[in-house]
Length: 405
DNA sequence: GGTCCTTTGAAGAAC
DNA sequence: GTTCTTCAAAGGACC
Image 1 (cartoon, chains in turn blue, red, orange):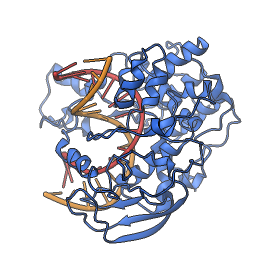
Image 2 (tube, rainbow, N blue to C red):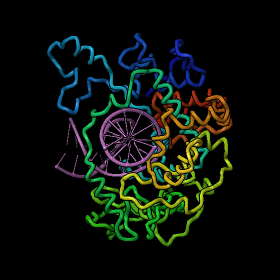
Image 3 (spheres, rainbow, N blue to C red):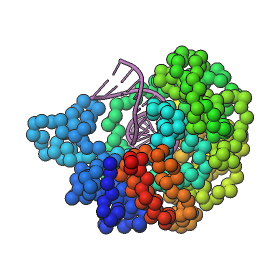
């Protein structure tokens, strides 16, 4: 599907002072589409860069046709815009993880609905150990670094409005419904009967996915009247996939005991490292107590996104009030990242360098999976393997491709 | 064909 | 400084 340039991935940007690992990433995830010789996000091989979407197939949400749709000869400004590709946001850690693990979950659960798969992946993400998550945080950090170097003037704001605004009311409804009766299904809110949010990873053994195929009434608690038990190691006991208006949701059995996740003694999001680097720097950081793990009751749709523990670590110089506020604040993570990513600042403060030597001995996340479970390699994916090998100095394995056969 | 759903994280806007 | 919103990926479902 995608070919690798002969001689491997070379540094296409001599002007950019980057190390070998960054160079590899640039040549993969960020091919020389910004180089004049390769306009429109085309790789040397002619492969369009995943972060670039040709404006020819893009239609502005405001009804304005994309430049390519203009049959009449466009003016200079139009031409200018026509050449301007849609630069996508760099993938964050979870997105990178999803990309890698989606195929595996699909294979295991024989699910195709992305919404359901994403829920599973979300839980898996929380059950990952710190080090496992750190790998993706590190990759994401490099993505952002390279992205910012390749597109210095680009801002996430540039893509605002490229999509149609979502209905926020529905999300509020979902969250409100999650507030309801005990044992109900919750969307984006993991709570037990006592109203305490439950880290997904606290649920133990893989079991069966309970796929609810019935339409759940629009009421506080899910009426999972009909369930179909589907063997799926990705979904843990007590987890429900309910099709309330096609909305899968996760149910946690309130009586279930908290059990350490297999990956980490407290491998939940609640003890996730403030940053990957922080996790590596202090792997024996004190685990949070259950009281710390308890999330505050909230009707917001994103109660578990920004974990207090994150802010506590990522803001080492903040006042003590941050701990109390952090326990209730839900956005400390983002707000504290004024200096780009927390891991960067922490890496600097801890070692005085942005390099990440602790990562050198880690397994390659891109080769840790069975080849058949990997999704078809994108240019980035393939080159990420190379970059990872270059970065971690591991034995370069042959590229794992699902479509090899 | 366009949008929604669903997840987490990053970044910007709004307050 | 905090909170909210948008967008990244993915593909089936829905209108």
